[in-house]
Length: 281
Image 1 (cartoon, rainbow, N blue to C red):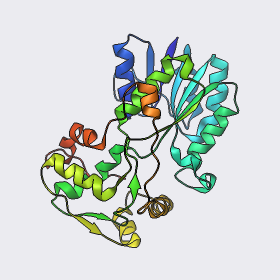
Image 2: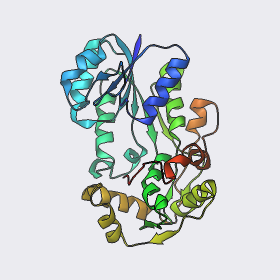
Image 3: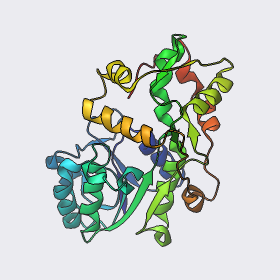
């Protein structure tokens, strides 16, 4: 049966569909803003598009969107969907997840799916390596990267590993029905990540330590206040304290998780002056 892949504009979905193409498996790509031929419209916060998107679908790769999850579950059951693979977040494992702007939506979607008759597999990535794109603007402008907690640790995971993990659980029934925490191979501070990126770009990247308030002012245009506060709390908690890493990427893909250096090599062009990339959250 057909696999519905939501979040069609995202890097993980693009990587997953490339793998499905390579193996000759049928899928339907969906997005709230379709930008490629054949992609169907499906806004996960608007149930109106669910029946058409789910028609004839046996499995779903689902981005977490809490707004319409109850309607999505109901329609998926009606359509005969057998398996949902949810791209969630390891932030749901925090004791205060239900109260965190970063985790609450992911947790609500997990709970709705796990309470349903749908067989559910949960992928919980930690820090996306692609978050480093948020440093592209100052790097291209030859300015210091301003950080409130340069010594905070993260577990950056490559989007290609997430796509391969999703492919594995969608195609191997023995792997389905469980939750996996997906991390990169190392816990790295922001300072270390920037040093690795500088090595790939063959130039040093200066870091400027700033106060949390200064950082909130810097990002006020594109990071809402509650999310900024939640990020600051998370970084403060991991300042100088390595976060745990897991072997779940290797368990699902058969190879060790790609390093942050590999991600930097794959995306070096994003940090060059003519790449067009700008500030990102």
